[in-house]
Length: 164
Image 1: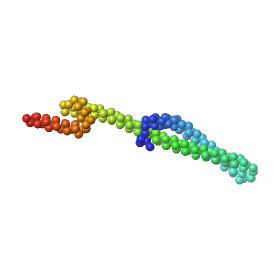
Image 2: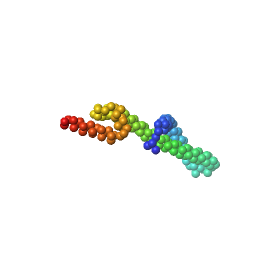
Image 3: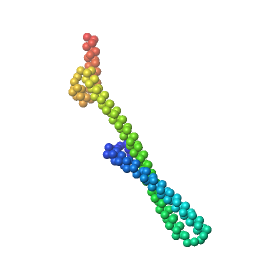
Image 4: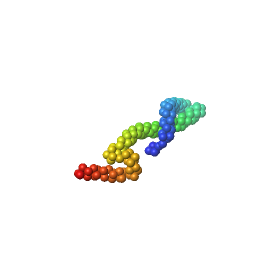
């Protein structure tokens, strides 16, 4: 997914990352509170069911209410678990994206260095060929092959001149 990404998508993902990083601790606290509440409801329902098993009384309505509350809490817990998994997944994608951005920055530095050397190279070739820069770029437009032929011709002609 993250192999082909635009800068706008990058910005949007980073904004989402900041939002998720802010929401993540709140959601985990909420999840822990609901878990505590669910545990206390389970304990209460166990206590009430123990009382009912010893005394046959009219506490069934109370047990049903506690069971309903426990079911609601279990649904909330499932929803929060899926939300936390989603956040974990997004945070992982964001870390991958941050690593990609670091690599892109290093590639950009390498690209700048490479263009510097490429700009320096025509000057060296021009000096060796004794031609102007404009002539070099004309030959460059024709193709590198033409330029190398010209370079080889100059070397051969220089060698012939030295022999004479």
